Amino acid sequence: NGEIAVVDRHGGRVLLLDAEGDVVGSGARRGREPGLLYHPTTITRLPDGRLVVSDQGNSRVQIFRRSDRRSGR
Image (cartoon, rainbow, N blue to C red):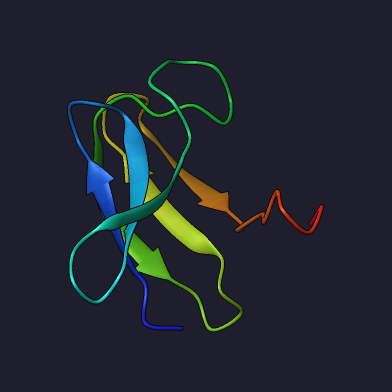
């Protein structure tokens, strides 16, 4: 869909950017609990659209799926 996913290492989150570089979405928050990120370093998009995020601060890899709050998914 043309979106680019990037990690905000110090903010502990994932940002979705459009083709112009404008933020169109964000996910996760900074923290140490499951589902939260603490110094994410790399991100990869899987063929099914899920995002794999390497989280150095938590010494783990987490997988996220996109949810669209407008449609309830």
